Length: 69
View 1 (cartoon, rainbow, N blue to C red):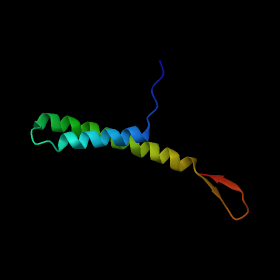
View 2: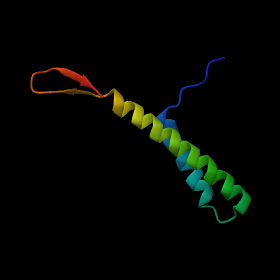
View 3: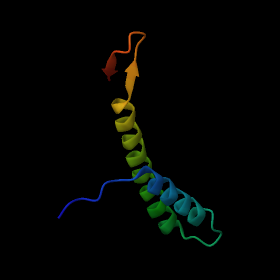
View 4: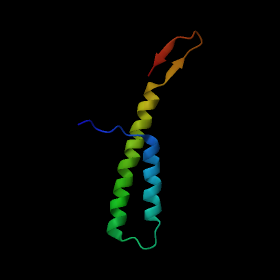
């Protein structure tokens, strides 16, 4: 079984859903803590995904040589 790859746009959608639930007037504290914890995990995945993309960027210098960082 392969692990489903994280998609950053889905991560942002999930964060929006979590925020909407946290803004509810009738949320219990225990549920809010669970949602907050889930949100922190999603933020970490988004950050890791952005870091990965940043590392894959190619910079072209004046001579057109490619450099990866």
